Each structure stands twice: as C-alpha cells, then as structure tokens.
Image (cartoon, rainbow, N blue to C red; front, side, top):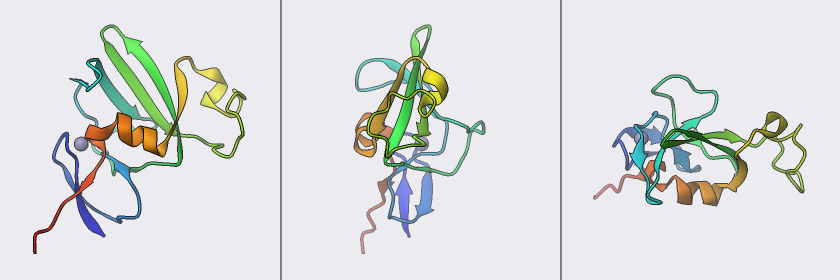
Length: 123
Ligand SMILES: [Zn+2]
C-alpha cells in the first residue's frame, strides 16, 4: 500500500501499488497537451467522486464531440484476448462511432495528467 496523488486535482488516495490508476474524480473540462478542449469519463460511473480506476490491459475508448469539447469515455475491453477487435458484438456494444482500443501504456500516455503518481516519502 502506498499514497498516491492525482496531478490534476491533487486528491490523495491510499492504494495497492500493484496497479496503475486513473483518478476517480470527474475533472473539469480543460485544454490537454494536444491543444484540444477535453473531458473524460470512466463509463458506468455517474458520481463525481469514485474510487480510482485500476487501468485494465486493454481499454475501449470512445471519442464524442460536443461542440468545442471532445468527450472521451473509457471502459474495460471485455474480450482483450481477441486477435482482432473487429467483431462489433464483442467490442463497443455494436460499433459505437469514434471507438478505439488503447493499451494500458497508451492510456497512461494520453491521460497522463490524471494518472495517479506515488507520493515520495522523504525519510
Ligand atoms: Zn484527479
């Protein structure tokens, strides 16, 4: 167990250090390093404050444009072992537009500012 914090909202959590996590809070819309106005949600979560999300190996990301804001929704891929992700019955619940599969590493890269970082404890 270890203390983690979210670089975006500074919320602190005490968690197992076995996983990598996305902050469980819904963050305000902001300009991301790609220069676009973005906001993201972890699917199936409606409350503002939720426990952090341990990033699964394969993630389904859906990008939806709402006027100037790009909204993304993240959900765990249910069939990460599939050789190709073209079967829309198994992925994206029948082919939602704007869908993409991301590896855990790609999630960490793209959502970097919301990935929990370990608090360094100075002895
Ligand atoms: Zn946060």
